[in-house]
Image 1 (cartoon, rainbow, N blue to C red):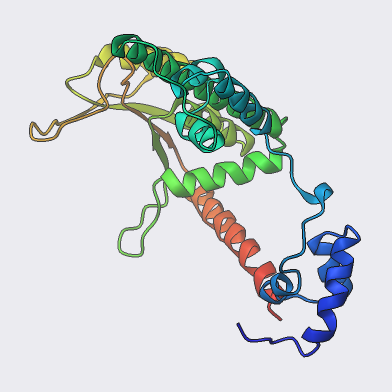
Image 2: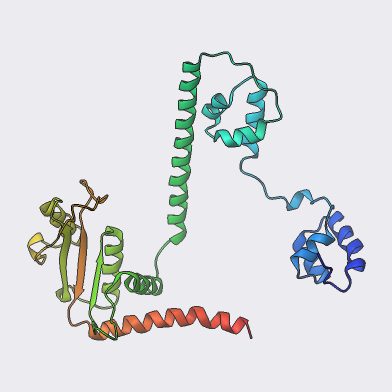
Length: 287
């Protein structure tokens, strides 16, 4: 690799000295004014990393426990049952340790393996659930400005849009996710759209439970089922294998705002404002 820094030879001893003194890569980079990561890597090549700069690894405790269990003669399957981690990780952690002698019949070993995999799935499900809970808490209370921007982005992704070849300045939003519908309705309320201007229509395949879907959507938005417009029945193509079936399939809900041409133009303008707000800072950084 070419030495592109003019003072490479002079900086190498200084970089090594700073590293041995316990400075991080960022501190050394700022101290020596070296912005090229390749040059910085070569300056620090062969120099041990200070312990304090190493990020703690959440699996360090599991690794130590896995090694301890392996020295006690446990198999990968038994360690997996005990710790709930994957066998691939266990293999990496203990591959330098002696392999225990097989003491169990194949059927018993297979049963242990199944329990180990079940333990891994339970751990993954718990991690998945906890991540979602933590992420939910990060949002906190939603300000009017945040709801405005969220609603604009959702509409521009899912709502009906005007085209030069087909003028459709109508605010119509269709979605199958009840949470998305609730956010959309809260957004319309924020914009001052009154309930009298809203019309709702269920769109669903004829093979589904149409009546149950109508009851569900009416209950979600807080209206009587008789207030829904006539349901749109989608024709089913027998050659298509549909996956949106079963009791949880309720089709989509279409939300239409009457007299909405002016509102549509504002939505389009808000969207262009969001796009412009993303572009302008980047363009400014390049000047």
